[in-house]
Amino acid sequence: MTIYGTAQLVAFMAIVLLSARPLGIFMARVYQGERTFLDPLMKPIERLIYRLAGIRPGEEYGWKENVLAMLLFNLVGFTSVYLLQRLQHLLPLNPEGLGAVAPDSAFNTAVSFASNTNWQGYGGETTMSYLTQTLGLGVQNFLSASTGMALLSLTIRGIARHSATTLGSFWVDMTRSTLYILLPLSMVFALVLVSQGTVQTFSPSAQIHPLDSPDNPASKGTSRHVIARGPAASQIAIKQLGTNGGGFFNANSAHPFENPTPLSNFLEMLAIILIPAALCITFGRMVGDTRQGWALLAAMTLIFVAFLGLAVWSEQQPHPGLVSMGVDQAPSELQAGGNMEGKEVRFGIAASALWATATTAASNGSVNSMYASYMPLGSLVGLVMMQLGEVVYGGVGSGLYGMLVFVVVAVFVAGLLVGRTPEYLGHKVEVFEMKMASLLILIMPLTVLGFTALAVMTEPGKASMLNPGPRGFSEILYAFTSQGNNNGSAFAGLHANTPFYNIAGGIAMLIGRYWLAIPTLALAGSLARKKLVPPSNGTLPTHTPLFVVWLIAIVLLVGALNFLPALALGPIVEHLLLTR
Image 1 (cartoon, one colour):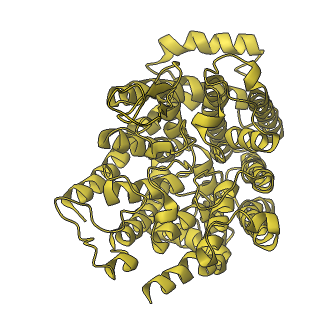
Image 2 (cartoon, rainbow, N blue to C red):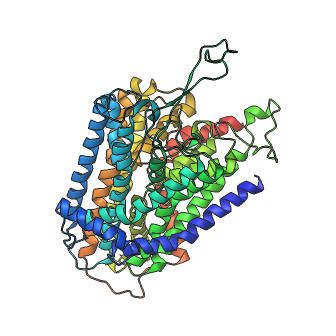
């Protein structure tokens, strides 16, 4: 790997860790209702929203009321996006005259953006009008992200409180997430992207006449090129900061209008991880023990760095098929070397592998290279990062509350091993908590593996495969892993815009988001009601390096046990066949 690539990886991790504390502390102040430097600007807007929506900001609710509020709000978002797609041919801001989106694709897309998955089975510039992109998809980028952050803040209060029957208000937490965190960061980041060349306009597509055009007197051709454009920068900013990932253009962040320069590429990668990493510090502040937050961040970072190293190493290796042809694949001053198929020359191996690892770790789903062209072990990294449950940083909010479930399991198993009643931050972990944790851990693998099995056993599922053998199986496994974990990235090589995959994928996304959110809040509500258990000599410290290692082991074991057989049929056997 080149010196530039190594420096980029080191700088990325350093900036993520250095920025986690100040941003995490700021977000804790937001959720605890403390004064921030944005109050003079945002407080009047916040009060106006509460007044118009009939929200009483001082009123708190139990976990069931908050679940109901979340489901109703997301149902409204889903319905709005669906109707916008179906009626866009009758609505303004459609300069290309695009028609109504097909019902099955509209269903899949509406579920995708409401659930913070942002899986895209369509080409944005050829399918969605400017109104659908901005009012529908762009708005849901904010609201789905703030939903996850609100669910996390409710969960944290459940862990921090004792003998309590309420967790806070979903409406207040969601509003404050949007106004004080997502909106300011997105506005600043959008301006930075525009400065780098990311397009932001409501003008229609540009038409140019190349050298072989009939408008050119010296030309004998008849061709004309149409260059799609639109209000992209505003959507790209929140797609990264909110771990959404849905691109304005079909090529996503491999498109030069979304991601023009190496600097924009680096900043977009930082934006993917920024909030999920900082929320660990927010957790520590809100529970009154910052060491707990740092321990969670350490566990996430160690897993991330290990798999990042595997991805970079795998893609830096020369492709065996090209070696036999005598192709020079060694890194040098003139080339990045390694497996450059499907990657942008302006980014190279290190930035492509880093993006692939970050986007699958953080439930983002955006791409700056084509994963179908990755080496088998490189594609394995993306699969594993999602199959761990999107808890290594994960989506904004959802990643951390998923990791907290693994913490509960780790504490419970450790308690059994030493013969003591397991406790976590003054709460006894008992039968109900383990039932909810078991649901959270088992629902996702059952969903992913169940739909994968259905696809490989039926003609509609197999008809979309563009590659045979292990690679074709990996395509299907990746698609349902991505949707079932609310990631949204695509392996490519699979024609997924069909009624079968649109409907099956939509159901997988609904389960991955809402069937996991409900047990999470139930777990938080149960912990909040428990009386404080003072720490004793038998209490397991959950902030030490030993516990960090134990937590990593639990996360990896659960992921490996659930998906190792499926991975063996896909990328693992493909690697063995490629290198034999």
